[in-house]
Image 1 (cartoon, rainbow, N blue to C red):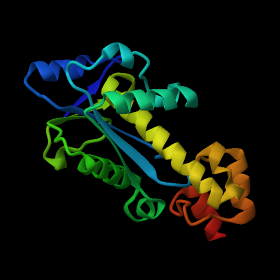
Image 2: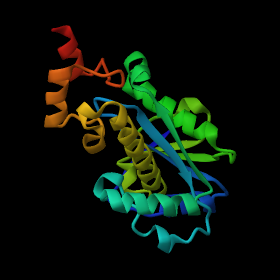
Image 3: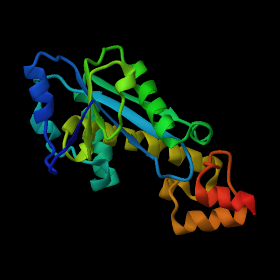
Amino acid sequence: MAVWLMANITSLSIENDLHDQGVSVVSGLDEVGRGALAGPVAASIVAFSRDVEKEKLADVNDSKKLSSAKREKLSVIINNLALICEVGFASAEEIDNLGIVESTKLAMQRALKKSIIKSEYLLVDALDLTEWGIPCRSIIKGDQISTTIAAASIVAKVARDSLMIEFNQIYPRYKFDSNKGYGTKDHIESLQKYGPSSIHRKSFAPIYNLTRK
């Protein structure tokens, strides 16, 4: 598996090079939520055709660099243009049992399996997926380089944020609608006051330390 470290240039150049080599379906994979204290890790797989309307993807970038409103808008555009656009999740319980790396791979695998169209090549943000038996390339900071990986990061982020807003209806005291499960000051204070919920990651240090007291 090749590992690339490149400059911060988001484009479809890697995808187009692979298309030129005869690869029809080049898919990008990325995850969100690895560092959160609550909720699942989410992953998305996205693929575009060689003749996709590139100008409509001009604003696609690393999801962390975009506003929530921009991500929502781009997610719709990506869904409309993509050959493949699927999302998978791994729960907090699975993260506690398997660890975050294996759970991230599980979420990616679930996204991959949802697709009717078979991926011929995978572009992945920094993870080694050679065990899957599909030609792949790991790209450090891939969501800042490959438009397809960046698109996957946006779709995964929008899907996970939406789910965390739903969880806020069940667990309003943790303010998941605003912190999305990440360790903000308010979130930590709520954990200290109320203890963890069923969707908190008990193996993660702040929560593990609380439950050990």
